[in-house]
Image (cartoon, rainbow, N blue to C red; front, side, top):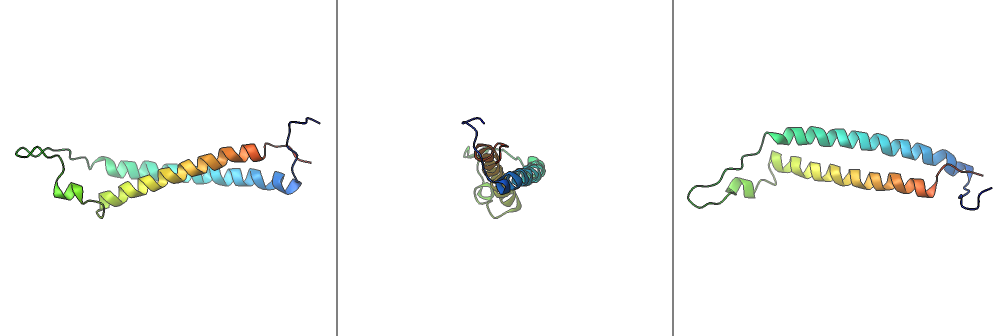
Length: 102
């Protein structure tokens, strides 16, 4: 027996692989949702500059948080944040349990 391996109970050896698969499926779903949201947002550029003032931000651009574009942007940030958290949890699960059991 290797002294560096962490021996854990059998319930952990049964639960952690399932948790990893669930995390991977959630990551795939969130990634696909992020891709769809980004494609929905691509056609909404509109980086025009005001000729008189040189201002690149219109009133609409400054207050678009409540609009459809603003909601899509918020959803993208939320999806990316969830992906980061799930990725961290996935790799932490390998430090907790790496396949050895009693």
